[in-house]
Length: 393
Image (cartoon, rainbow, N blue to C red; front, side, top):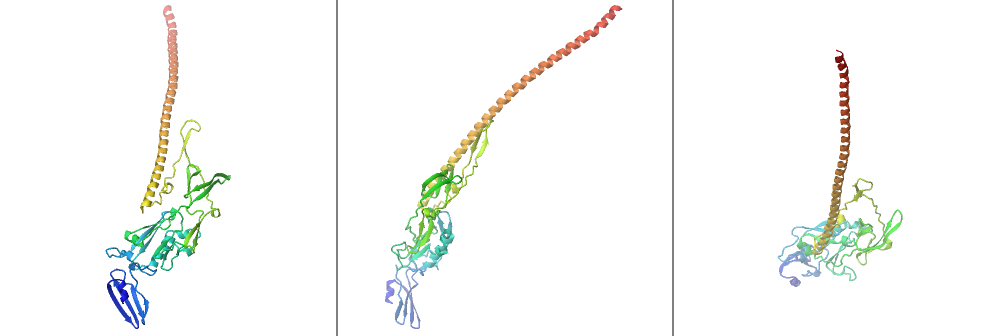
């Protein structure tokens, strides 16, 4: 039992069954109760593990010192849920508990990434890749030429290239720190060369347009931006030797995307004459169109990137509002001009109608005078016989 002194001070329990001895040591480290010394017929079967030994796949998280804080508290005393957030906005969760082993963590991460984040849906990936997203490097299985070069580490891979395939872990700080996650290979965006062709006539609009992201801005049309899938034209395969996903592009994997443009310009007729109209439209102000649908603030770098994306979105919205404001001012000016024109037309019509009324009144007055004159002459004519009769009397 002298070898137990390498572990530290604590309690030793000895159990005997036939010729086999089973010795359990519970030391000052809370997770050392699984270090065993087994003797069978005088032969050493298993030597006790020492503080600092690398964990194997069957090691429980309870027995790993990283999961104990400086006060001797086990961070998974209560099960902790960790959320995985992918760069494209997809989310998945998994829960760690006291009874989990390293292999359990690997299995839960593979399910969360493959099924929860939808990476098994990437072209050319099948269920055979379901366990390739996460692996644990045990002592003696290191590969100096690949990612699995350091024993005692998790290797977490993404089958989606670029920023949209980046995976961020969100959860209890103590649990995240216990996992000791470190970026060993930075994500890089895909580089594309795009040809734009007018499909009906076959006219070449643009050739070899080089892009560092999956967004084609202002090439198809000045008012149309095209966003295609981040894995478009990328063939993903698993390299068993390098133990990593391989992304292949090039002309052999080229794909075609068709965009149908429909003119939905709103036309307002603002004048009295033909073709006196104005056309306008309102751009898409949704989160996807503004590029802010998948922003994250789970780290300082992502928060800084989010600030830049939000600034661009605010600038785009402000420009659209300014365009609508200018249109409103123009319509207000047109309304005022039409009001003045209507007033002038009414005044002209009033003058014409006033002139006709004067003429009719003059005609009426003339006829009235003629009628009165005729009546006066008739009266005089009726008096002549009376005057003759008076003379004869």
